[in-house]
Image (cartoon, rainbow, N blue to C red; front, side, top):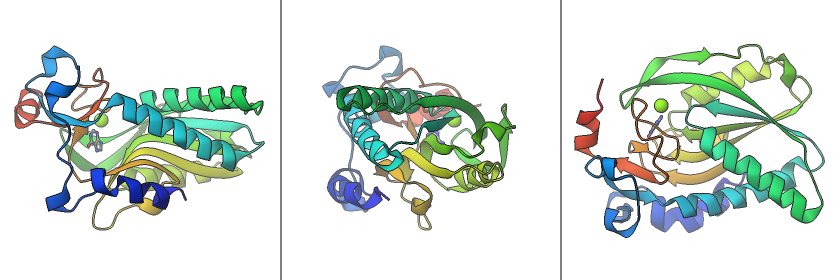
Length: 226
Ligand code: HPA
Ligand code: MG
């Protein structure tokens, strides 16, 4: 697991304890869509930082998959940006090191959230038949792993198709009392249990068009509530 090496350097910035809680960057420091001005508290992880960390994860993944082709299973909708950027970095690194790994990307859609609350029911929408995973080295790419319920259910489902191996890349893992850290092999950032949006993460389908990862404000929460 590449969890520990990043939790040390990220500790100061993105780790929970309340007094050291990373407050995020002021909105004045970066650019973002004007229409979200009142809807976000702060810029929690700027887009450039996300990109650089994603490049680093691509290195780890290349090392682990070695000569195996990668069957990427992108969890929609939230995972689409992370997945696209991660696969792009894997291709660039391959090109620069003459070690091309073939990547094939398939999509799966899950839904377990209503407003900012996790619900009990997990739905796998679309692409239930994953028999193309049989014997393959699979990389599940998910934007955020919080309770771990979704990921556990998905892993169980994927295993029934008997892949050769399964790894999980999660851009964000929320720090919760009984957190699901062991489910995620490649962790981008560990963050406190706050509702974040942007970089394809949504709140009732809003904020996917924001490039940074931001903390939703009270105003934003009210404005886009269903
Ligand atoms: N933001 C957006 N979607 C999510 C989150 C979050 O913090 N947690 C689980 N799904
Ligand atoms: Mg969502």
